[in-house]
Amino acid sequence: MHLSELPPERDDSDEETEGNGRDGDELVVKGINQAWECDATFADLLLVDQHGEPLGRPWLTAIVDPYSRCIMGINLEVHTGISE
Image (cartoon, rainbow, N blue to C red; front, side, top):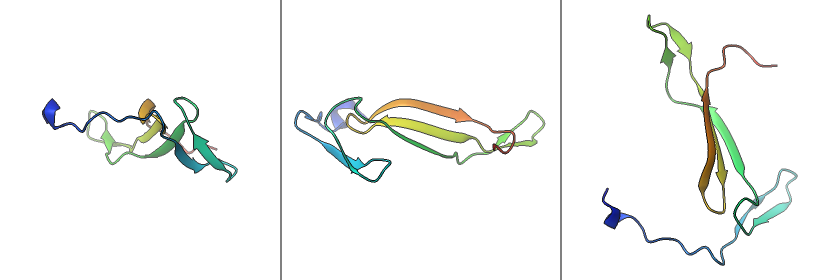
């Protein structure tokens, strides 16, 4: 994709993002870093060792600022057992 094909820059000066808080109450985000959203899922790949033996599917966790849509952090890890 060429830079000229990118959509125009957003003007978020008066924009609000709405959602629900953990207690179910309405949450209105009016600025950067006011709220972050986190989600985790199994990545759609299988890790194997140097002998081809499966190690498992890694967890992919992402944290996003819903106002700016900035990715605040990502984590990719393999659990080797069941957590309690």
